[in-house]
Amino acid sequence: MKHIIYTLLIACIVTSCADVPEEYGEQEQYMNITDAESVFIVSNSSINRTSSRSDSTANKVNKLFKLTEDGAVEEVILTLEDNSTLTEIREPLSIDSIEGYVIFTFGPDVIIPQTCYLVNISTGKINDLGGVKRKCPVPQGFSKQAKIFTDEQNNLYFRYGDVDNPNKTNVQRVNLEDMSKSMYSPDTADVMNFMVDSFGNMVYTDWEEAEVILRKKDGELYTLLNGENDATASTYWIGLDGNIYIFDVNNDTVYRVTIDSNGDVRKTLYETSTAIMVNADTEILKLNNNVVFVTYGDYSNITVDDGYNFKSMDIPFESITNVRVSDKYVYLSGDKGLIKIDLFYDTITQIYNEEIHDFDVTSNDSITFSYKNVLGKINENGDVTITHHVDDKITNLKLIK
Image (tube, rainbow, N blue to C red):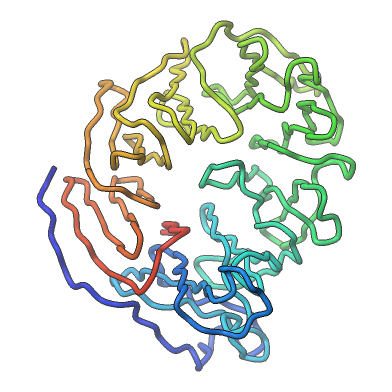
């Protein structure tokens, strides 16, 4: 472990955004994140406010902050068409990101989702995705990474709890060119899990039907697993060859699903008796020539598919809380800190021994992390820098640049 360098410890710096930048215009909705390196939520339980709630959430206030590229911590302000700031009337509940965009959920308090925004990182422009009854995108079990997919046609896909149909979760498609939104899953489906490939073919789990279904890009439906196969516990991913793979958990079998140029679907056996450990909380990531399966919770191993077979790798944790990949390594946080895994040499390096709540990593191995009210960085050499102390607990830390 490299030495720890303590730099300036400061309380949250809140900047005023009363003046709207000229480039946005008075009538546009925007968020001042164009200079942000990362964004996060600070949950303040000491602020008094009037509330009809009698429970412990009544006096909690969430605020949205950014760590700028210059290293400053500033409050993120949302300005509406009338120049009012949204942070005065609604609170951030969740943050999720995909290249070029951030998705935020806001609500009237810390537990009730109400509005979903898609924000362009380079311009700060806000696109209102509508009212919601659940966080947007809808979280996947205990996973900290919401499932968000894009295709070759510049469409964005995510699970959505529509305010008009709060008892079901559907998959929404947003075209990033004209920001049009449409339901991509059948209106009868209650989507528990899903995945979309680069062509727009979607695999999803229908909770009510207990089936795993392929929705081809032309809209045709094809059942991959039915209820007899314990389909709701199964999962799927895009393999190293670009094809769809599905794990039949009941039979401990992985199938390859191909769609030919005529649209014909074939499901063929890929491997039986695998070492794979998956459930609804499993994070599936690609790193070079490997597919990595990491399950949150009380696990002390991960699974790796190198294109030839599945193998299990033991890790020095009793529980796993988060996972990220850079261009070279897998990073895992858990009950015993933060580790770096080199899949080429099968080595594990402990790089931080203290508990971490959230973390994110760049492609070249620069890490930003949070624990309670502490914000810090770990560089590619393993040097740890505690950069800021803020007033209250940091949650939902996301690196956006």
